[in-house]
Length: 88
Image (cartoon, rainbow, N blue to C red; front, side):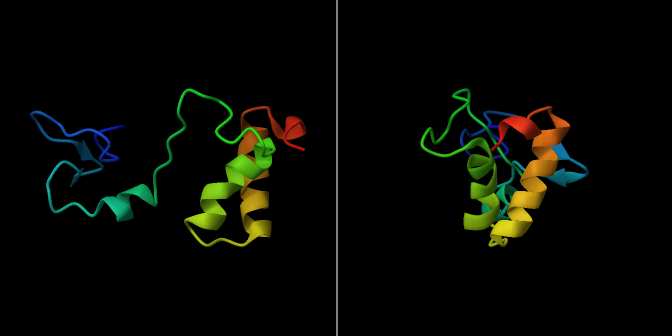
C-alpha cells in the first residue's frame, strides 16, 4: 500500500493491480490516490472531529463531494463495520 501510494519507492519488481502497473515513473499518483484510502495506526486522525466527520473529510475536501453525499456514503461504510451507531 505504501509503495502504490508513493510513500515508499519499490527497490525491485513491479506492482501490478488489475493488469495495471503502478510502479512505473509515468504513473499519475494523484489519479491513483483518488481511488485509494489509507488509515494510519492512530485511529483518531483528527480527535476534535466526530467519527463521521473524519470519514467524510476526504470525500468533501479531496473529491469535492457534497456534505450530504459524503455523509450518506460514510454512514453506509460505518454501518458495514458495525460503527454506524457510534458515529454521531
